[in-house]
Length: 364
Image 1 (tube, rainbow, N blue to C red):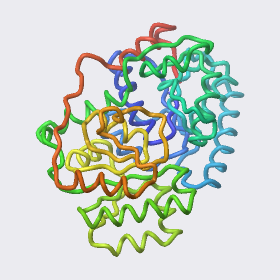
Image 2 (spheres, one colour):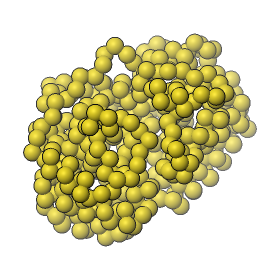
Image 3 (cartoon, helix red, strand yellow):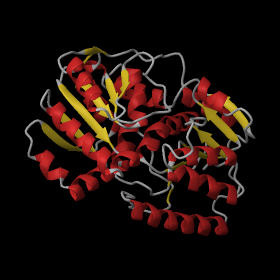
Image 4 (cartoon, rainbow, N blue to C red):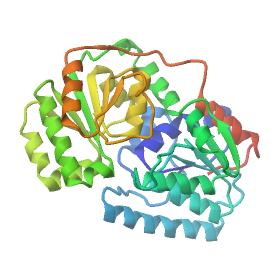
């Protein structure tokens, strides 16, 4: 099991807990693409420490940093392959559409290990948008032997691929969110009681465009004039704010609080207290749709359907008028926290598939 980013950890943690609950043997490997908050996530989810760190203590929070990490990871993987460290593994599990997903899948294939891809089948009609996620998705689908798809559109997108395609009945984020809500049950019920907005931005398409970034920051400022804003900073976003001068500008405004990232349960607590969420993150979109938290998706387009049809999630198209209307609508209202379905566990379905083949063998 190879994990590289915070979002991957959150969505993979329920799989680790399911494997531990069944007493199944596996190895957990951190790729080192991200390292920040991993120890707090381990504590929050009750998962054990990793068996191996490919690039210890690394945080690839810039384009040069990502290239440097990729080179170090490739060298570390090659050394492990030559030493036979992954020999005998029945499956190598990768998740999602990050650089870690692709490089891990390539390394596993080079080691002769079959690849299982969790959250397989997400597709955009455009090869270069979002970049590089769409390229990663399509490439990994050619490398994977087991495609673990969360929904009907994903299954349809995987028609014709080689290997086995399995409907997991949902995203593993459902299991992670259920775990967090169980711990927060006394606070669970009516959302928005904190009376603030959450902002979470990190996508390359937004941070890499000066024009798009300026629009986003102006939208944050405008929102802060309607209700308090709690801006959760990803490492790459913090770096962008510092270099662009926006960190100082935002920190001077009394309605904006700049927050460091925290563990997952604490972030879910933050969402429960919010009136609305402004984000460009796919995982945040999925979480908000499951919870019922009103969300404006700060992107020009999205391939994720979560919440859009029901109206709980609104696509901004980077149009400040859409954002302003959304904020005006929800700034003074609360919302009802949805009950998550208790009759299915995508993580259990995935582990069933993994354990069914070569039960008891080491899994990476």
